[in-house]
Length: 266
Image (cartoon, rainbow, N blue to C red):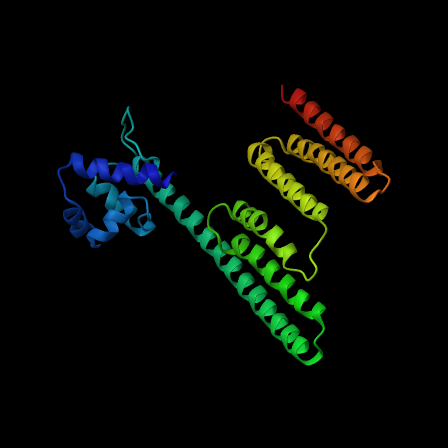
């Protein structure tokens, strides 16, 4: 159910029936601003209004939810319409429950972060230890990453990665004395790795989980090699590729499992 498609469908049906937004709003018992928001895809009609809205637009509930007219219309039994509405209500109820859980989790995390920050700032004012101020910054940075994960309705992981990518270098630079420049490169490469895993999972996770895992581990090999090379070239440490070999073997095993499963499915 695409919100944009439904909004455009409502607008097109309203215009086809020669109704204004105000006329449709009066029939539905809502404001014309509400109708405008539906058509601009700012919000969706409440579930309790779906059947009434479908009747007003002279379509079935199924067509309304699909956002298009059935090219081969056939009578839809009342029982089928009821099942569709019950399914949508169930999905909406589940979404609200999940949203409530995420909200209270966010409240609990925020309260603990605030308490920790206040305690650290008081201790810093009393003792003057700069490490306490650094700990306070870390608490704030962690809270900033949790915010999109628990409060974003769409793309929470992507939004958290955006914050991480934009903030990691300034965050490291805020430490007294800073970090050597190679530490920033490692942070940037690590963020790029997380973006790679994110896009791999978006593409393959739901239908080919083992393939997603294999590519993620393979990207881990690149990350491992890059970090070892940087450390070897900059600070003279002997590269240790033991972890790289282990990660590569794990990636190969994941690819093999994906291949076997695909063969079994035909």
